Length: 125
Image: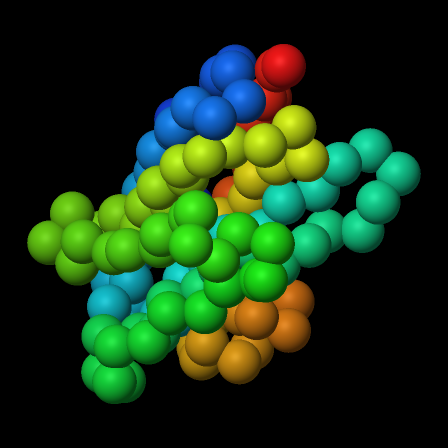
């Protein structure tokens, strides 16, 4: 069992930055691929970024709209995954969810086994 707790959301002006954190409990963090998704009212949850498990070649994945602006990273010593968000745009406003799964492909395709409760990110003009 893995529990995920997100933090770091908030209100930021367009062009600004935020760093989201996801603290994971449980012994499987290092063997889990981790990811971030986001959702706005009335829309389906959208993949944002993913990072491979520690046992795999280190790889990161991003949806096209955030490439060059967002960076996903993990700290295995702290059981935490981060999402550094720069040059934020109004369209980035959403609830951001952390996810964990057995592989990067499973996480990217929405097949994560575990999900956090979400943290709100609001970008203002």
